[in-house]
Amino acid sequence: MEHIDAKFDALQLTINSLKTDVNSQLMILSTKVSAWESKIGGLVSTMSSVNEEISNLKDENVKLKQELDDLRSNMNNISESNHRNEQWVRRSNIQINGVPEKKNENLLSLVKNLAVRCNFTINMDTDIDFVTRIAVKNDVDNKTPKPIILKMQSRYKKDDFLLSLRKLKNCTAGEIGISGIQSSKKIYFNDHLSARNKHLLREAKRLAKEKAYAYCWVKNCTVMVRRSDLSPIIHVTSIASLNKIV
Image (cartoon, rainbow, N blue to C red; front, side, top):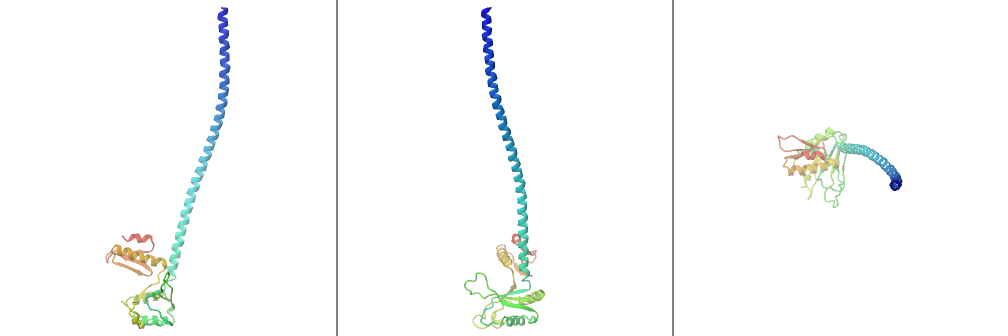
């Protein structure tokens, strides 16, 4: 029995020692778990903060995108308004191309000769605002005569005069009093288009030719195209409207 008691005492000591070791390890593990929990809590808090910032950035991005769209829309509106105004100030103008230049030329007399030639009644004192030549952009060699711009006091008078001038088919410089080797030069009469509308006219003519449209012309400073006599008229008022020429 003494021997058994000794064995039990030894076992009890071993168990107590094991308990002490286990408790010590559990304390260490608990400390580490607490530290991990603290770190994980910090990470969760950081992730939450990051997610909140991302959400705020997304909202800000949507807001900025909307502001950008609004700015683009406003810029387009301003640009369109400028284009309209640029053409509006030309609404009473007639552009005459092909008239040879000469020193001391009398452009008022030339306009008077044109009016007589097309049987149009015009009062040189009250119907005309001014008449002048204008420089052509990128005209390096100056071989092409500068266009003549005739500004009239009334748009309606201008429209009537232009309509009469366009009836002068194949009009030449000689027919309006210009003699010499340049007398055979052809003269053309058009609306005085803005830079944007000139570009639209060039593109419309190119597309009309490619797509076999029968007509491309300008009326009241607006570019128009038509496939045939039975087709609807397409008004080319913007770059986007050129897509209608198909």
